[in-house]
Image 1 (spheres, rainbow, N blue to C red):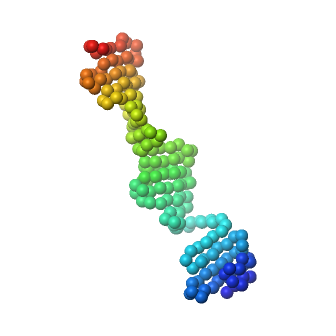
Image 2 (image 1 turned 180 degrees about the vertical axis):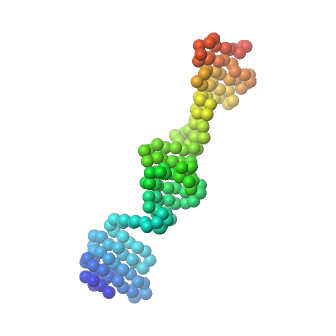
Image 3 (image 1 turned 90 degrees about the horizontal axis):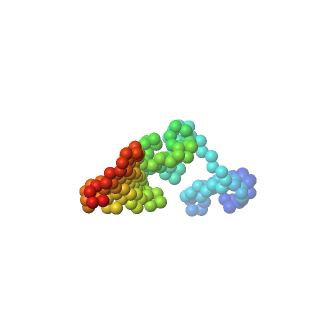
Length: 185
């Protein structure tokens, strides 16, 4: 059946529907520039696609769930989402609960991550570690380590700790008091 088309291959603007010789139902809406074609096994679209949902879980596309303001795929710890609703992070991954996801990007572009690696640095809940340097937000300190020996800078002092001696070898306090040194240093 055709309206302004004489065959499935006709690129004239119009509609053509057929049950081909192989028993495959095919449909072609459109022209040579823009079309929607059901080939019998696949939907072929040339042009813009607009999808609107009626309810929060009304559709899927290629394994992605389409909602009124979100697009998600996966489940639990493998869930990935995009959300334009404003209350959830704009981009999130690693949790079905957007606000609890270990990776989040707000609508303003702020990035939150609770673990992972970036540029040779390892991110944990309260530390950022790279090479021999540890930035520790829970203890408000920076440690430069060598094995278990370290130099530590905190809000109250600068001190050195020797693993082989098992003690603090020096401490310079931020309050201006005299520095202390262990015996033999």
